[in-house]
Length: 363
Image (cartoon, rainbow, N blue to C red; front, side):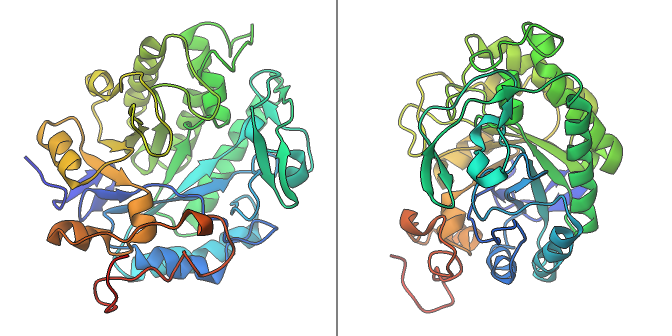
């Protein structure tokens, strides 16, 4: 069986190993959502990953409600992403852009407009804004007339990503974001062709994925899902048939890979008692399957050996360990991540984590 350190193909991309860097929101762009120079350093440091899935990146001003997160809808943003992708490629790495619309998780204090969603619902808790935290707002339902424009926004963002030098894109349909809000019945109360039945709730994700695949190639298009349990306020009363239908439809499109975020009952960044669905979805999706959430080397080895996973994505371990692949290969202790610096705008906790060659011991 392949190991974590063996190559793997994701569509047209040949990754040198199966340790994928998961998307990680880091908030180092400008207030206008333009990437900055330090982001090139950060990603270049982590280019030994088989594939980097870049941080969630807004497809439109409407869809990006996280302060200092990057976007990819404007020419200025495209130009600012180019040094990032070039830095990764110079180090021999691969990087794809994660395309993001937050839906009801956005806030008007950041976007300037009322958030939208599948239905008129509100996320519980508080949103991050430039002026601190503020209660989430009630979203307005997207109209049927707006949906073609939303699909166009994803297509424009995908084409912009390719123009910026990315090797492909991942459509973010997980973690309670807009497409997840359409997928799952706790947030989708529509009675039109985008609500009600499983077929209807899957429709928007498939339209977006097909349109992006048509624009840049299915072999450069991926999708992220979070199928088991509640995620950022979104859940489903009967997830298995919903995500089987989703996996089958994505398989028919022929996407480059499918990533599943599946926390367990003892998850360290979200937890659920709902069993993970990857064993079921594996039988319905024939392309490369990337699994995520609280993996270490031993667990990654088990799921690769069994054939359940083709690759494993690591989030916080890559955040704190630029040379994670080498550390896993050698069995070297890992640096601990510093949550206090996740979303600051500084180099501290971003580009200053020690590597094995820097002469500093793991914390």
